[in-house]
Amino acid sequence: MTRKTHLVLGATGRTGRRIAARLRLHDTPVRAASRSSRIRFDWSEPDGWDTVLRNVDVAYVVPPPVPGPVHEFAVRAEAAGVRRLVLLSGRGADGWGDSAFGQHMRSAEEAVRGSSLGWTVLRASNFAQNFDEDVFHAPLVAGALALPAGEVPEPFIDVEDLADAAVAVMTEGDRHAGRVYELSGPRSLTFAEAVELISRASGRPLTYRHITRDEYVSSLAGQGLSRHDAEDIAAMFTLMESGLIAETTDELASVLGRAPRTFEEYVVRTAAAGAWDER
Image (cartoon, rainbow, N blue to C red; front, side, top):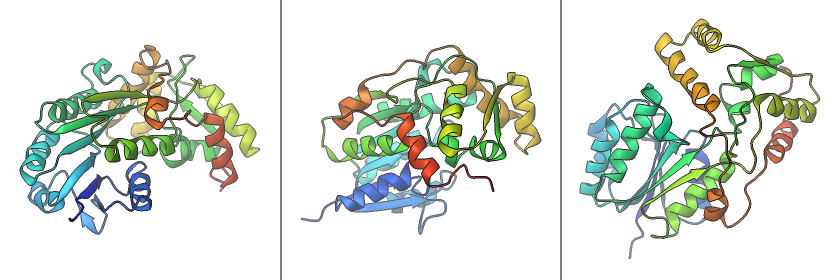
């Protein structure tokens, strides 16, 4: 009997590439798809979705930054014979108000949960890897990170743990069906504390400075982002300051069957790889 494929969308991104590698190591048939992969998937090109979905059993879905397309994707997935969808979302998705980011997360969740397919939603805290693979990296390499985040802490999640959790959900049958998991790291840290740990491990005098939301939006706009996109990113810090996602949860340990990695483990591993070395 032919084993059906596990589809990984966003396969060149931070979560997708880690999930695809783990599935391959489990000897699981994988179809890795993204805009830049050999197998192309683009949320703005629905004519190509049916080919990507053919013979797929379970799909890992990273939603696009706009509401709507995930509903059509779920319809196409059902027609193609897909059994389950695993959706990446964000912690506290219900509390993002009217921000565009909140709207697209809620739209994606509603599409998945409202479909006739099996589903699981992974709501993840901010990634620890934001400090070396994304928006916080360049400022840290330059020596200083400035954000509109004050004393309210964040339970950063290691993407390696998130990938382990996604693989467990995709491969362990129906045990995780119909579940919304709020996933966090094992303890909460302020951004100032996080930067101090990175500074110590990297041996560099890195600093953190609190700025206002308006200053941050202006800074992002000065880097070439549209005002709309800058406001969207800043909305995350408004949510963080509310304290809604400051607490840790034990749901990651429940999925993994072990304790999640600490931020210190991430920092040591990443500093040793030279991620924050002066360029």
